[in-house]
Amino acid sequence: MQKMQFKIVSLILIALFYCIQGNAQNMQKGKKIYETRCLACHQADGGGVPNMNAPLDAASNVVGKDIARLVRIIRYGYNERVALDGFYYSNAMTASPDLKDNEIADLLTYIRNSWSNKASAVTIAQVQAAKKKK
Ligand code: HEC
Image (cartoon, rainbow, N blue to C red; front, side, top):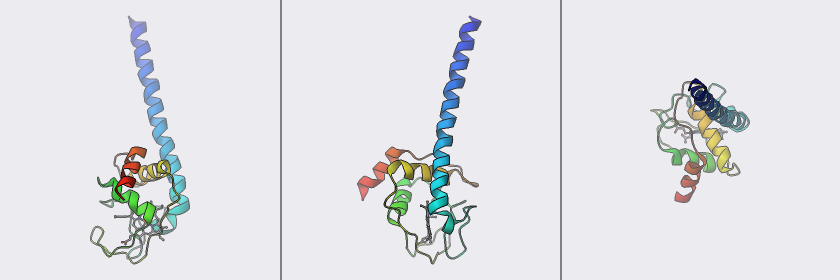
């Protein structure tokens, strides 16, 4: 009986390990993309540049529920006179139309879970759903 319990606990631990590792891998890939494409404007700490580039850290939209909007911003770029958490930003965000669905999912998972941000991971299915609306 005890052997059986040990086996079950071991299996659960192994499954857990793979789950955590899977997430970590997405975060790592997302971080790489962030560093090559986004860091110059949004900065290493996600704080952006006042009045120029919007912060991603502690930004309500970034950790919010509208994933489709975030996907569109990355794919098509963003330049609208709309206040983001009360501030306006003069720069225009460049588009990344060449990023693949899984890369956008990793990237969004990364920015939603870095610095002080803590939000759900973004799946490839969510990225694909955003594409259909456009
Ligand atoms: C050329 C500078 C620049 C680059 C590069 C850039 N951004 Fe942006 N980003 C901006 C600016 C400026 C805004 C705000 C635009 C506006 O208000 O019209 C913005 C807005 C955003 C927003 C919306 C924030 C909110 O509060 O709604 C997200 C999300 C975002 N950027 C993510 C990214 C990601 C991810 C990358 C890398 C693929 C990236 N940006 C690359 C300048 C940039």
